Amino acid sequence: MKTTAYSLFSTLLSFSHLAASTSIDCDHIRVGGQKFDLSKLAGRHSIHVNDTSRPPAEYDTTWTVNLCGPLEKLKGVPNEDQCPAGTRVCGVVRSWNPADDPDKKHILVENVIPIAGNFETSTGAGLEPRVTRLKAQDSNADGLQIELNGGNYNKMKQRAVIQLLCDKNKTGNEKRWKTERKEEEDSDDDDEDEDDNNDGKKEDDTPSMSDLEFVSYGQVEGKEKMEVLRLNWKTKYACEDYADSDEAKRSGWGFFTWFILIAFLGTAAYLIFGSWLNYNRYGARGWDLLPHGDTIRDIPYLVKDWSRKVADTVGGGGSRGGYSAV
Image 1 (cartoon, rainbow, N blue to C red):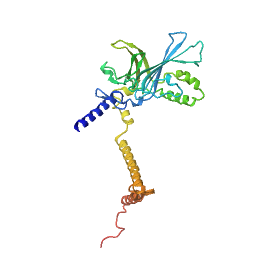
Image 2: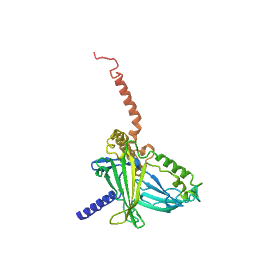
Image 3: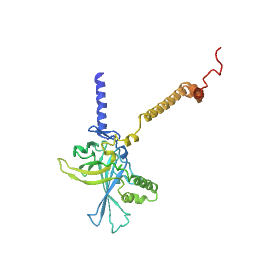
Image 4: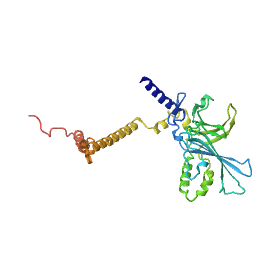
């Protein structure tokens, strides 16, 4: 029995380590004694890089990142023109001929590059995130470096190295509202512009919509073939002193907020379970469904009596009606 329990505990422990090694918790990142909250950077962020070095065609690469979760599929875009499920960092290369197609109506998707993500079910590769402080590289630097893995393209492993640079004047989301508005417009126009969406026109026309900066992408020297995408991202959430700032404390939930939320959820669960039990066990209906239904019905009267007593006490009405002992 002890052996079985021990093996079960070991299995659960190994699963917990596996989950921790294949994901990243943006809400609670602790590195070198410093805590960071990158949850405000969650969602889709893209940057576009133009390449005109191969005439007559022009090429555009869209690098898209979601640090805190897998990228969602875009509506109206074929699956083969998007990275597979589980991708966190994706690159899509498109091309067009300006001479023959100045309005970009016939854009071709040339390459789809899954840089990083959780692909355990398909290729067996995991995200394997690695977070370090920039101070480890430069004592005067402030910020984080996040390495994400898992991708494979042209028989070469892929890796994303994203440096989050401390900038107290930027959130990293300043231009993101345009992306969200653009996606809403694309969703509304799916039926009218289905052919354009399939050609990738709308996605290609979108300018860089987040404070990402493309640094480089290419093969690096090493024991195995690997291509690395490097991006910089300026944001105040990467500053080492931001988590302890007044702004961060105001934006977080306090103790009383959590207490009220937990109390509300606990009360709701108690009432729902009690009502279900009374219905199935006793066939109760109406007020009789609620546990302690009589007490709940008396609450308005109890509150009214309590309020009257408080008012009498404050107003001095607690005497004996003016009579005095003889």
